[in-house]
Structures are given as C-alpha cells and as structure tokens.
Image (tube, rainbow, N blue to C red; front, side, top):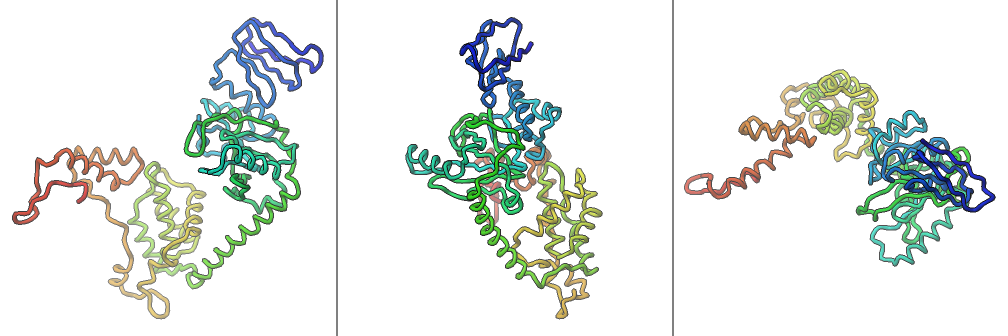
Length: 447
C-alpha cells in the first residue's frame, strides 16, 4: 500500500503520520512542514527536494523509480548507467535515452545509476584538475570562482560525486551548430570546464559512483532543483559570447587541418578504373570476414579502408563491393547504415600513405595501370596469412580457438600465451638441438 500525502505548507511545523499496512509514502510538497512517520521502520530520502519514505532497503531497484519517473515527467530523457560506474548499462548508450515511462520500466529492470541525455541542453561540467598540487581550500576557491563565472543563479545545479558541479541550461540556438561535446574546453584555475550537448550525457541523482582513478566515491545530488525542461533558462549572454568565440577558434583549427589534408591529396581523387576495381575485388576476397564478438568492427573498418583509401575507390563502388561481395561472408551481416559509417570513418581517419597507394607502384607514365599480370600480382600486397593453428596438438588447438573466441581477439594474440605456459611447464627437462653440438632450452614463447 502506498500513501500519497499533500500536507499544507502552513500550520503545525511538525506533522505525524501514523500508518498501518503502508509501505511507501510520498510527500510531494517541497514547502511541507517537517514530517515524522511512526508505525514502521521507515527510511527517508529526497527526490529533488521532495520527501519519500519507504520500509524497503535503500539500495532496492524500485527506489530509482521515483527519480526517473520524476525526470521523465519534467520532460528529460534518461537511461540506465552501470551500477557504481558512469558508463552506460544499455546497448546503445545515450541513444536509448527516453522520457517514455513504459520504455523506462524495461530499461531500469536492474539496479543501476541514472544518466540524463543532454539533448537540447548545454551542461557545463566543472571538475577539479587531476593531480592538482593545490590545497583543498584553494581548490574550493577555484570552484567557487568558476561557479560565479558560469552560474546565473537560477539554473539547475547538481553536485557530482567528486564535489564538482553540473550547471544545466537550455542550448542557445546560436550555439547549437557551433559547439561540440568538448572535454577540457576551458580552465579556471585548477578547475576544468567540460561542455556537453546533444549526444552527451551527465550522471544524475541519486547515482552512486565508486572510487576510481578520476575521483573518490560519492553520490550525485541536486543543489538547485530541476525545472520543467521547457522552462530551462538560457546561459547569460556573456557566457554565450564566450563559448561562441571558443567554438570559432576550435573550428577554425579543425578546418585548417582538413584543408591541409585535402591539399595533400588533390591528385588522389576517386579511381573507378575497371582494372583497379577488379584488383580490389580480388584483394577483398582474401580479407577476413567481420564476425560479431571477434573484433568484427575493426575488420569491417580494415576492409573499408583498403577499398576506399588503399585502392582509392569512390564511395559508391566501395559500398557496392562491401555490401554485395563482403557482407555475405560476415556473421551477422552488417546493415547498410553500419557499412556507410565505416566507409565514412575510413575516409576521415589519418593514414600514413596517400590515397590509392595500393595501385601506385604499377602505374605507367600516363597514370594508367600497366597491362602486366606479373607486375600486377607483385604490386598488390596480400593480407597476412592466418596463424597455422592446425600445427598445434589438438588439446592446445581447441584451447587456443576457444580462448581467442571468448576474449574476442585474434588467435595470433592468444597462442603465444599458451606456448609460454607450455615452455614453462617443460622447464629445463628438455633441450632442442639446433645444429651440431648446439642445444637450447625450449623457450617456445619467444620463437
């Protein structure tokens, strides 16, 4: 049984509720008088300045429900974060954030922390510089100085587990396309300023994060309560101007790097020569398939890089080869969106070689590929040969294959560990004759 109490904000300063058969009590008036509860062993905590009493353990999963329901009612999108951590506990991370209560019941099926999507928001994260040599009082003075700089006095404020602050604003339209999710965007004394927007998230109350390299253990709590999402204030104009200036400088540096990169490869445009496509097709056929749980994403990226960058094929041709000839070998098959994303990633990544380098060693003076099958076969580097796992005894072979699969790694990284273990077990009981009278002990792991 749940009792919903709505005490008046005036009258007696102390109100006693005598209950029987009641397991939970919500006090949803933050101006309510002091409440004492008798008749059961109740525990009390606050949801955004509102009281909540329960006979259940404070670490019970159902205690999160008043929080994420409250956030969703205010119009904020939330999602589960790993218990005691700050990393997402759902498959798609912040992309799974929602304000739909039905979906939240499914997402928050297990005990965990709460993450809040910064979609449509600008969250200013103030935190202490790691390994600062300043005293605690000096750090607090820096934090207070940074707060005065960015806090307008009315925006919601959350205290983080390390003692830092989250200042929550609505994203100004003039900054929406300029700002990114930037870590260490600014610094105020020994306080680092991170900026979070759509695509980013913050951890919110009542989440508890264990101690780690970034800070001590602690809870998140609201110091200045949330408002309805549509009523979030914009940052002060001087803060907007400051961030706009920073964004312009950062974006200018990024554009300068991209221009230099484009100039470097002006002579390396798309190369959809039929001969190049045929060579790329043969090369792709020898590349290992991308299998989920076995570094499949990396292998798909390697295939996309070889086609789009190594052979210099166009986006369209690269997609046709990956989608039509490579994807059918993968388990499970990749979606069109995933393949296009990998092609985009391959084109944006910095590479040590110029685009089209897999074809360049066999060009004639006019830029065309020479019609020389022998030179062609020698000029196209082939993927490395797979590790000869069949050469191992059956016991070691099975162990290596299963170990590599369970760790999601290539078997070539797992076999040396097995060989080293076998070498240690053999110790100095055996010697290997190299030649003549020269023997060595079986240091297999180093062969």
